[in-house]
Image 1 (cartoon, rainbow, N blue to C red):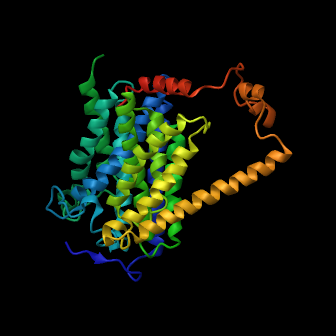
Image 2: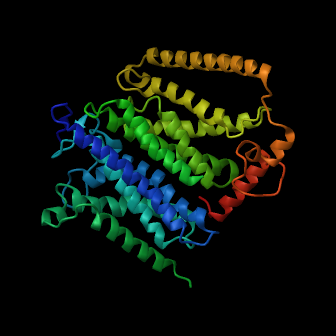
Image 3: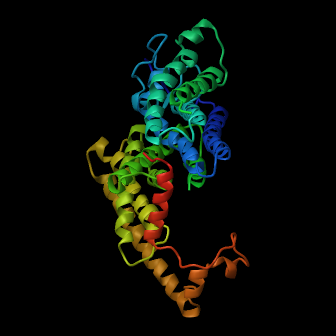
Length: 418
């Protein structure tokens, strides 16, 4: 395989912009699918149903980056691809053959299709299939069914494409394969916080990709790829941590883990390879999990764990950028120059933010109370500040962290969790 080096003369800015937009739109379709399926089941199964779609974003993304794309589009004969693109190697700053698109742009677009097709299968299995079994099936299906089909139909040397059959947007690769697979799996079964995280993941693609400020230099596809893979690997690493610590994973944990990956990759999205971006999530997830656990044992009430997630996630991402950044990172140059600069930036940011915020709060405290009354904490602040609560309910004490853990445990019990 001879890679064609990316250049501004070969890249079509309009095509790249459209493809990246399309990738994001296809990606959000999985969220729409989860909402659609969730609205069709009994209310006791909604979370599980949505999770069966959402988890595909993590599992299929990691598999696609690691080996799926290579098996689907590597040149190796009519039936299956080779390992030329493992971890999306040979795609960064290279053109995709036969197009005016960067290789990573094409790979991300196809990944969004793989995620969606895997999630479609769950429509046949919700309310009945054990979640553990479903996750294993999803992973194997992506490698053993979807990737070969992709090769047959869309790869340049695939036998169905060579035959002359046409599939413009996935009639065979996605809809037929997922529908039949779900039906068969269903027959073999016979016995007589996710939405918001998904939308954040969707928005983050523009957040990272748009930061390149151009569609001609290859940075936007790299940033989008890094964003997808870091969030996916972080989601999975968070789930693993939950299972190790609590004995089971939860849908809330999966959502938080994905957001942590988005946070961690933000500093380095445009500077790291797809394989290294997975390391951001794999390291950042457990790191933030442990940080949250430590902060929760302190007397400071960080209600939604902003420090443990955003603060510590941002710190981890900044430092990891010093390790994994191409050309200047520790693993490339073997020097601590960039890493030292990253750490200096972290320390300066922490110090300035802490001192500046403290000064602001102290000044405000002189003129007005900082905290609502204890009674209002118990009854809720909506009534006072928005002239009405979204839901009418009896006044009760605010939930403790133990209550929240119990609540999450109950919801995860209903999932038959990983």
